[in-house]
Structures are given as C-alpha cells and as structure tokens.
Image 1 (spheres, helix red, strand yellow):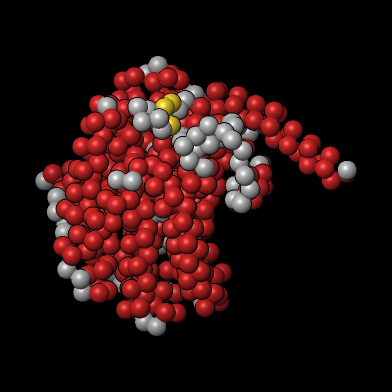
Image 2 (image 1 turned 90 degrees about the vertical axis):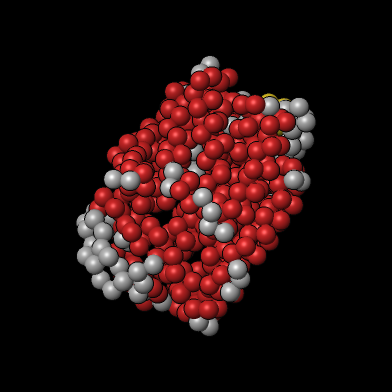
Length: 460
C-alpha cells in the first residue's frame, strides 16, 4: 500500500469510532453538564443574538463588536463545505449522512458554547493591543497543560495550509468549468483579494465579514430554498430517505454507488464537524476579541453559529440536492449542487455560474478567517514577528492550491483536523465543571436579572 492508501486508512479510522465517540460523546457530556442549555435556552439565544443586531452592546472591553466576531466565525465555517461538502457527504454516505450532520450540530452546540465561553474568559492582549484567545490560551492558563496547548497550536498552524489550498482549488475548478478561466488566473485573483483582506488586520476582517457574510448567506439560502419549494412534493420523500438511511444501508441507484450505515456516520460526522467546527476550538479564536460583559454571553453566538451553519445552510443545500433528484444523476457529487440550482436559474451553466460566484465569496471569507487562525497559533508559539511570516505563507498557498499544486498535502487534511479536535475536546471535558459554573453564574446573575427588568417595564 502506498502513502496515499495509508493516509486514507488512518483518516477513515480516526473519523470513525474514535472521533465519533469524542465529538458526539463529548458533546453529549457537555450538554448534560450545562443541563442542555443550548436547547432549553434557545429562545434566549435567538433574542440575544439576531434579536440584538441593531441594539447597542454597551461599552465592554474587546476589539470587535459581538456581531463582527460572530460574522468572522461564521465566515470561517460557511464555505465550500456548506455547498460542495454537503453534496459529497450525501454522494458518499447517502441521504442518512445529513441526519448525522444534524446530530453532530445539536450536541456540537454545547461544545461550541463551551469553547467560545472559555476563549472569552481566558483571552489576553497582544503586543499590538488587540484581544486574542482560543484553546491554546485556555488550555495553558486554565489547565496548566502547556504541552497540550502547543500540540493544538502547532496542529492548527499547519492545518491552515492544506485547508486554504482546498478552498482555493474548489473555486478555481468551479470557475474553470463555469467561465473557462485558467486555474492560474483564478489563483492570482483570489490570492490578491485574500491578501487585501488579511493584511488589513482583525478589524478589517471583522468589518468585511459583517457586510459580506450576511448578504451571501441570505442570497444563497433564498436560491437553495427556492429549489426545494419547486420540488415541494419531494420533501416528505427526502426526509424519509434521511431518517431511514441514517440507520439502514441504501442500495446503488442511478449515478449513486450506494452506502452503508458506517459511511453515513463517517461522512455525516466528519463533514458536520468540518462545517460548523464545533469541537475544533476555532470559534473561540474568532470570537475571543468580542466586546462582552460575560464569557457565556458571547457563547450564545457560538450556539447560534452552529445552528445557522449546519441546521440551516447545510440542510438547505442537502434538501435542494435530494428533492431535485440530482444526487442520483451523477457519479461526481460535487456537480450536484450546480445542477440542482440550475433547475431554477436557467440551466446547469447558470447554476454553475451562481455557485462559482458564491463559492468565491464563501472562500474569501473562509480563508481570511482561516489565515487569522493560523497567524494566532504562530504568534502564540513563536511570537508576533513569526506570525507575519506565516501570513505570507498562507496567502501564497492560496495560489498553489488554485493551480492544483502539492495535492499530497491535502490528503493529510482530515488527519490534521483530528489533531486539532482531540486536544481541544480533551480540554473542554477537563474544564466542563468551570463551563457549568460560568453558565450557572450567567443564568442567575444576568439572565434572570434581565428577565425581571423586562417584566417590570411591561407592568410599569
């Protein structure tokens, strides 16, 4: 067996029982620790996030507004995985993969809440006066496990390189098929645009994200939901396939090769985790600079982010692919979304153009945030000056990925992702008591006080 084969075997094993137990089991344990806060208080989550978009947050310490931090975090997760990743998960794992993406999201809300909470609690100011935080800080300062913090930081610093390459290649390949653009031309364009965003620092990243991310998400959702509504008669059948084949194998039919329950689990959990990044700790890095009066309050944005990313965006994509029947018509799952969208946009070419445009927006925001993540790891490990060197490496990797270079590095992506998830989830579980106490403090000291004040205003 060659290197590629061994990498595939290790990756499949890691994203099978080991990480299934860690992500689902760990998320369930954290859910129990906080009394399923993410479900019981979901109405409060909506009220404190989307319900306060146009309200002043108060003069709290932080580099970004809560919405800017959330937009950056969502921009980092809402990318090619929400479009191509969902159709690939269905193509390789069957419709049941979507069910396991949902399960990963529900328990992942607790993981994302915990990591954003801890990221806000243990943040600190860097040499440039900006707030920074994330797993490497709460692992070292909260647990005193410097070795595990270094392991996480090094893993994420390296992982950003192939992750950026995959993102840039997804848009260059789509642009080539939709517009006939040479790969190198697309590479120059997206490398230049990425450089403009990332060299503006975290404040520019926040400002770009808060303007671009809501627009691209809403327009993309409108088209995806439009496809589903055109095929409204197929919605019950789509849900039947999702729930049935989450637990039973599905035979080959049309261009679909068939899949067992193990494949549904593997691809649903892996793509679900990669989509919303719950358990990876990256959300804590993006949201640590946010202005907030309590760590748990920013954690609410973590819960909302997972819900928006997986339960809304990924579900819309998945239902569009299933109800349109495009998942059965091709042996290349990546083409299913453009073909499905093309049904209401005037043909596969128009669908490809639309998907290409939104992939470009998704990829630019995603990679901008990914590079920020990588920089913060480099800064933590080797100082601010080295982080500037890594910024250049990351920007140049965009061009290399766009032209299809260094593909052997991409094969290690899932293994590198596992290197991030494992130390972060270990830390979250070890600090679960602290998460529970902070959550309890938020409920008793802030939530109930604000609830009482609202009642008094109504009765006055």
